[in-house]
Length: 380
Ligand code: PMP
Image (tube, rainbow, N blue to C red):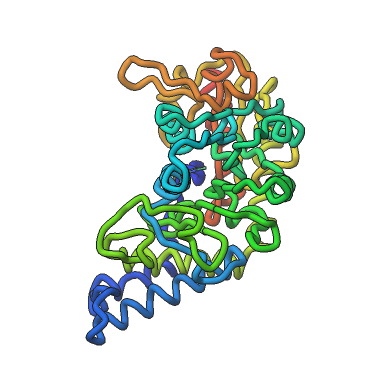
């Protein structure tokens, strides 16, 4: 089969895997065991991974806290901040701003925050799937405490102007959080230079293992901004309790280092392939439409609407093609992508939409074949 679902997850790079393996075997220690060398080896490995992750995103090691992935990091920001603000002043009103095309972990987390009495604005996006700076400015209230915007959208590959929004937040003394899960490794990210306060990202989208990620929290003492989400033994400086998943963290560190080392060439490789795929699709599927921005988009992603063909109808013929659809009809309940809806697509159009995402091991030959498979499926 041809795997074109790198935005869902990536294979673990063999170089990542080989650095992880010893931490399942001889180096099995608990990094919190400070009294013996089994513990020290594990502790050093976690420390090294933290420097690799920090270097990749342009911050200090102490600003990186390991989590169980971007879902956890996103939830931590929302509920850790509410907890902190309520502790400081239980009566004060709280206002958060986000968009209506966020990942479900932000969408649903923010909805839960509303139930806790937090005011939340879900800003609409423009036709390219981008949050407009003017709309952001207009939404600010005296009690706005947090803005959270996805940097690169996982479905449509649109890119939000995060550095510009960060500058605005700085001026207004509002925390800026970004879900950078699909941004790291694909566009330049430097949290310090770009003035970002909080940033979530994940291992398994950058050729690392699943179930590990990080939250970047600006500054020396993260407890100033956020309360923990998970309490317990005090690991990760008391910010995220639970024994650290050492092999996963080691793999995440290696994954970040590899992305950093090959960044420019890798991004160019993805862009070339993406543009090649788009031209193949246009040649083979008359009337195919591209969702999101035509050029200013993730190098790894194409989201297309097929002309009047529901993906459901052709899915049986696409079994050899690992792609993702804009709507899923699992238990009889139709789930239509809120992202494509947010772009202004009709339900019908959403049902005709496909996401193709590529990465490190995608070849031009695979993309030619993928376009042929799609063409044939449609013709039938
Ligand atoms: N945010 C975005 C933009 C994502 O694409 C994903 C993964 N689909 C997540 C958050 C969740 O990441 P994780 O799987 O690490 O919880």
